[in-house]
Image 1 (spheres, rainbow, N blue to C red):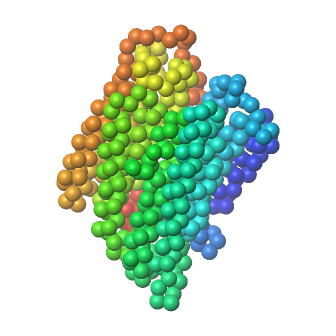
Image 2: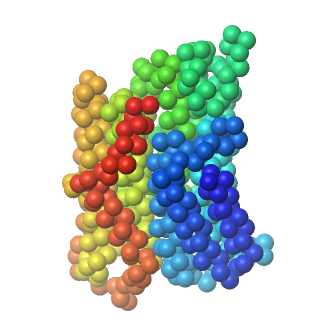
Image 3: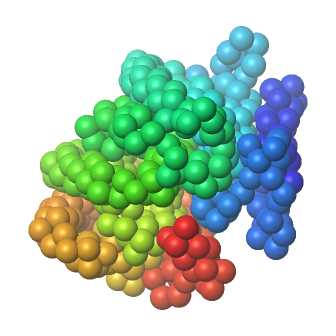
Length: 476
């Protein structure tokens, strides 16, 4: 089962390079196979593979479901999105049409993210996270202009430095596991079972390096500088996957070392470090969201904000972990919705500038309403799911006695709300007719509608299986 989840998208990706005429349909086929296997995993937990190096635990099941859902929705969206790209983007690259390469890299990206999620060996996870960088870089460069080239290089260089620091952290973790003439393997269950035997000083160093390293890939400030460029210059379906799925993979890497350190009795260190990163990320995103004039960069800085909230949540302890895991799902759904809608706006208005996009509601009531609903969801307004998860995280802060931090968080969220409300309302209001009627293809509208409905449902009701799996994560 696990082998199929990893290998089927990879094999179909190779087929997309060879069968150029049907490559976009292969993207959908890969998404369907992956989704069906993921659904099957809910009914029958797959057996571990390779001596426990690969497996799916509760947190892996949650992240796998998020990734599979988003990829399935994005694959439907991409069928129409690729048809609307300009002719200059259809040129071959090394004899392969750029759109075939785009499809193949998306499938390789899915395979690599699945390997991250199913990795129980921390070095295998590191390899998989590096693979996500290599698979997604060509996707960021899809438009092949100077801005996308700069974004791609920035992404590769900054994330590679971060991943290198994480590798050093894994080395230190290996040293901490070599105690009392006994070598503890770097498989998660072995590390958790023997956490009390790990060398505390080397473990502290490993934690700091892994948080900084994977925090770079996750988009925690001040390590986030690649993220606004990459999200802004990528095709919209890629931006949806980067923000909704890739950032979660880096967060999972941080959560794994957090689990180990807490089992080793280092709760104070882990909490303080993660809360510091979380609070700083919120502050940086608030500064850059206020007055932002590029709506895709606005959404990118919103991702920095929500990654900060995830770090705050797990820093607040068990109830905060529950809120963070629920927030991971809510943020992924909503942010993917907004990036997909941003793609529709960009294809119609041909501009990413907020001050050049006016009267969306006047030109298309359906698109304008969806854009406003997406804003309400991502800003944590009731009755959407993000309201519930943000409230859970902030409540956990008060319960832990961190009242000042919780209040500062509320203040920063208020500033972010003001900045985003200004941008979204300016884009939707007014009577500014476009030169041509807006093109709203069903395959590009229905996916964000479905995701918004999911976000709305999660604001009222968390399905019992989902609630149980998040409780298992929080009570590890």
